[in-house]
Length: 126
Image (cartoon, rainbow, N blue to C red; front, side, top):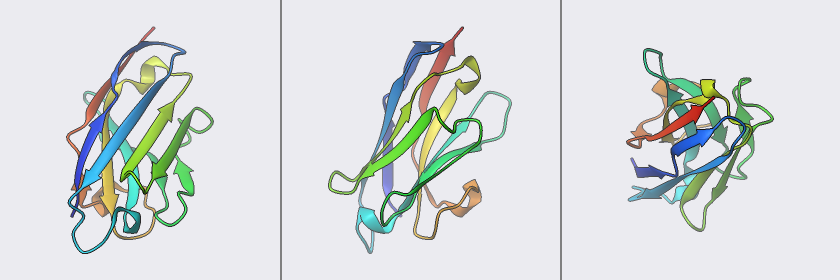
């Protein structure tokens, strides 16, 4: 497993932008580059949902339809950090955003990830 710490959340007006960061440490049995990194979010009263994932080898991304064209996931393996650049934010993007890691291939499913951060709150006002 790996320890993950998210940052960068906050309050922003609709149409605004934020960049979330997730710093990884303590990777056991391998380096950061051996982990697939994903972002998920959970709004009050709703289930946790997939947002984006970056392939471990080259950062090739997959996105949820709801954020495609507005969010960009990127990773810097030299800094052990994955980012989520969020543009054109909408009130429905309001949620607690989690970073997650797994050794396997990219996955949309939260149950496939075995390391999680504590989350960072994003609130978008209308």
